[in-house]
Length: 436
Image 1 (spheres, one colour):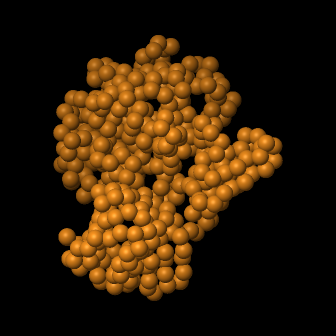
Image 2 (cartoon, rainbow, N blue to C red; image 1 turned 180 degrees about the vertical axis):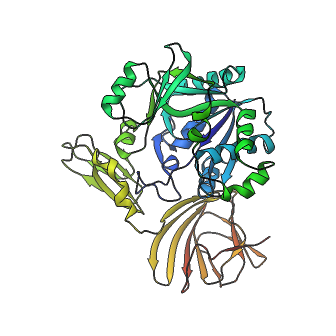
Image 3 (cartoon, rainbow, N blue to C red; image 1 turned 60 degrees about the horizontal axis):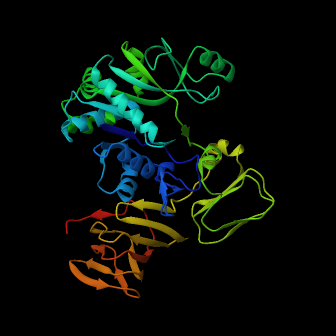
């Protein structure tokens, strides 16, 4: 089975745990059997591999998310990177070209596209296998998953099938309605459109060539910034006559807000938090190393991270976005392919960061034009390379790099550093990579 996971999002609805480069799918909310925590993307990837160990999984995403994907999934997935945002049709065209030209997938093979962050059980992924098989038959050019609605939602589009059969051709699509209109749709057998569909790879490649002048994946990638912004629905679905839908009646939740996310949490407190006996329906999600105490609260979510602190009525938390848009804040935490970093102090001419490198990983060999840096090793062992000179480091060692100095650090075990950046113009753009 070939599965494409669409990974987008700006991370604003789950502020302060998500930010501009850490979308909700990378935050570790879900407890595993070994008492660790996993993110949405880790959970979905694990479920796919449980249902189909041979599945080829590719994530279509932006540059900003690549490091987090590699940090959480390693090299187990393919990654199709959008050079910039151009909506879902260009993204799906690009990943389809990636599958054909980079991954070598046969154009006659079926591909399933779905969001990266549904909260589902394994029967959802069993359904994806059936969806793939149905697309492979060629009876329709697109095969959609239609989710049996559990209430008249105003958040989803609707698919109205021609019949009540398990597999039916589609009669029409409806945009997000009011609750009353949704009830009328449901009475006609309508299904939620969860953005899940399958096609033969050749079908989308042909559509892409019809609408975009390109030769192959490399050419499309180079031209990507010039493409028109258009959704897959407008570019393809609304113009396609041969579309089938398969009914899915299992659990399916879109955990897009704090309200819906806390419903799926298996425990009320993650991190350091205390609820007194008079709290009801309260969740604490705390990434800070300080305790949070809640007393006598009802239906409230409390979330704390280096980015900020949220205390909100759960229902009101759905309206967070415009308030977060008004907050100007430096990114305080990010995952990288080699580990993660957390900003712990910001001054006019200095920035202090706690850096964690995973064992066996290293930073790029790089330099900075406008700042000096000091590393203090606080945990683990590793090696630094400074202007070509390699040196072993351990707890208590201090390494100093002046502006222009080429440097990197390699973690032999998990390695933690305090990095102090010093300069009049400290910027994330001030970084030049070098060959080692």
